[in-house]
Length: 216
Image (tube, rainbow, N blue to C red; front, side):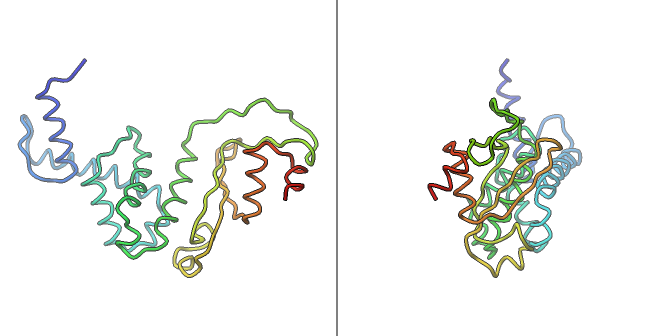
């Protein structure tokens, strides 16, 4: 059932007010009461973001962080109905608005991606593995990988050290992040380019370790 046009307008105006704080007359409301709603909504969004980015929160100056969160809250129309997913939109917003360059934080994009991937993988839906045998020949059989993993490439080693230290070590870094199928915990490993290539050969192209080493 479609909402009445007037109802849609009121909801839209209220949503805009919650984001930008610009005073607006909403029928049946009191100004002080509406302000409390805005504080509550902002608090929920801010908590969702900060819970997903504890390292970034500690690294970035408080004034800059507060500005980032406020700009996101004011200008971005969140699409997700899941509160935890808002942090992912925060990461996308940071990329789109080139915050790394704007605020002089070269490690920002890598840092946000690293922390967001951990949150996203922890909350992702389970991925069912196909049929496989519980045992086999490690060398000649095709291995079956845990499907809940990702490979990331960074310019700064934010997965190995604090951002302040990572800033001075730009290079090419590769990270394997996966979710434990038993307890759901997220683990990550630093990988060489060769390791990444081997995983790709076996997981994407279905090669055995033997075939992969022969190709190498």
